[in-house]
Image: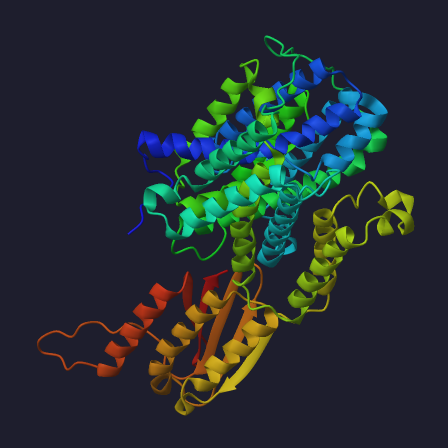
Amino acid sequence: MTARYDLLSRPPPTVLLTAVAQHMGLMAVTLVFPLLVAQTAGVGQAVQVHYLQLSMLAMGLATLAQAWGGVLLGRTRIGSGFLLPAVFTAAYLPAALAAARSGGLEAVAGLTIAAGLTEIVLSRFIGRLRPYLPVEIVGLTVLMIGIILGIVALKLMLGYDRAQPLTVTETGPALAALAIMVALAIWGGARLRSMAVLVGLAAGIGLHLGYGFAAGDAHLNIPAIVPELFTWPLVTPHFEAALLPGFLVGALACTLRAFGDMVASQKVNDRDWKRPDYANIEAGVLADGIGTLLAGVIGTMGLNTYSASVGLSVATEVLARRVAIGVGIGWIVLAFLPRAAGVLIAIPQGVLGAALLFASTYVVLSGMSILGQRLLDARRTLAVGLSFFLGISFDEMPGFYADHLPPALHPLITSSLVLALLTALVLNALFRIGTRKRHRLSWEPGAGVAPVLQFLADAGSQDGARGTAVLRLSQIAEEFAEAAPQLADDRMEVATRFDEYTLELAFSWHGRPLTGGAAPSLDETADEDAIMNGVALALMTRLADRLTTRSHAGGQHELVCQVEQ
């Protein structure tokens, strides 16, 4: 039996430090994004190293904000409280590169502040936006992120952008590192499984250096210029309105990505997970926005939750929040160590790619699992499928969208994730027009419950209801069918109403009311039908989130059961 460290657990120091090191090693690959931004801005090497130090500080503070999971300013919660570190994201990269070219690092910082404020505002409306952010779009977002991470990882491993790809000295250590991670995850014991990524990274770096020694050039390319401490403020934020659209789209994409990562984290941490906890999601998205806001104030680019860390947590079964706190503190400490930025950047890119590929497999599976929570009807199937293929086409047809889309849309369509997300949101809103949300059935109780169960299955499939919620309604219908023949004088009317929030099942009939039977006294004769009706009512009350009974004039009675999606 493998050891699992749940959210509030206290892992042993060895497990804790190993998990912290693995997450930080996996996160280090995203430091390439601020490095690219600094290089695009044309600053010198000393400023680039300063910029990376500030970037590490931003990652540490944003990770702590997400792990906080507490209360601040009255009832406002900040942070999901999950092991969900913050990293630099490709969602902001195209816009940040454009801002760096035209306005320098000052423009990147100013527009990053605007993006953080946008995400903070969006976090306050997550509940109201729920019909337009259904769980299948969240699943699609997580799935797309996993695929994108996997493709990036493969490119790093294979040396896709290098002059000589597939070299023994570069690709060999990466493949060996991946093989070790996979072997430990499948055949290793609990202790080895929890440190699979760390062992793989160490082995890959060791092989890389070994090849270097054999070739006579063993070294890690640590920059020669190493400042004693970072300089802050490195830049003064500057706002350029013309570049704002790209950052706003990035903020929307990061909101959905954080949404998906938190749903995935909820699912991982709760074995009985049934539906998203929107209060927790709002707190997490708020923390994500605050993290990006802090990054802009510090002077670097925007951050987002890290789906790969969710995958790593699943792979190692170390889910403790203490790991996130350790990761946040670790990055803050490294920000004050002069050589840390250079050492992290010097880790072979292929070896980092192996760790990223290992974690991305779990992200893809998580996205598929979230999508599987729905009974996808034609509308949802088309919205997800068309958005997925359109998003994939962005990378398969490089330059096509840039050459043929109107110039006004170029700042909006910046990546495959953004294209898939915007398409899914538009199609979801469009397909909601004219949808039928109510279904009715005339039911003869004496015929048994089978017609009602088929009716519920058909209605759930047509409206894309969650499978587990339809199952609960079916169980309620089975209990009610036991009492129905004694209640109705004639046929019953059965009606359903499904939306993003609840599934409602209503029965109406003429005859006797459905009431609980009181226990008879010693000198009374038991009313067996009333007692059995009371048992059925009690069971239905336990199965439903809300259950109400009503009686109207003329012997008309109604039972309404609601189950939350």
